[in-house]
Length: 276
Image (cartoon, rainbow, N blue to C red; front, side, top):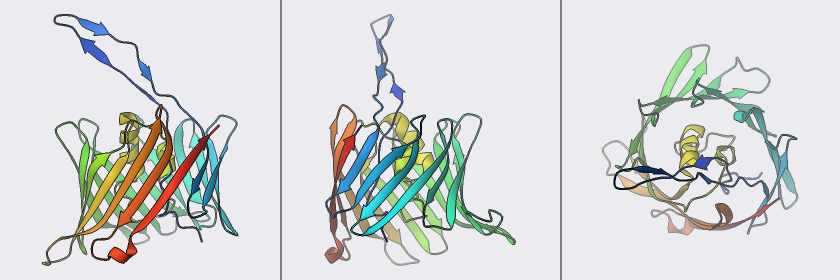
């Protein structure tokens, strides 16, 4: 079975703008257009390969993965430019996305493919008045109702960059800090969302990635800090990614994951991108 924890996937589109001010008069500068490129493939140094397949309208249809003699795929569904579905071809579940009238993601439901009315997992995204993600609620929904399992709050620095996510549950408190970001890059949020609810979903979810897409950057270093009960907190995990970027296109990522409490579990992967 191919583990999707091994690879973050990437790409993106969108425009940013610049404006410069003179002493007294505002001078309009031409828009800086971030080029949109279509990934052809990503290969990992452990033998894993992902090939990207597109629909006629250039939206991503699926990513076909191969590792040794094992194959699989991640499928995507769209309504215009909005991602509506994401699923692993071998899974009984799929992720369904909902948006508000402004286009902000407000909910992700992880539902059975054949019976959406059955037990499902849900992420609800709540925003502040300045349209920044403020709270994410992780719940289980079944015939007994909605049971809240975890609440994550999002904290920003003076420059407006996300710098910390604090998640609280009955098990304790987990804090993710974003210690650094990539150079300006072009990416699509869909490439970073795992079909399953892995441990990184507090950062690699559609709401956070939707925000970062508009800022043209991705987390480069993320530190996870765990506190359980009255025990002292400790650094549980550090993910460090070095980006090689050319004209906003990611050419290579060197990813290292370390566990300070278990140094023997350190892992390193190189990912090389090709484009159409």
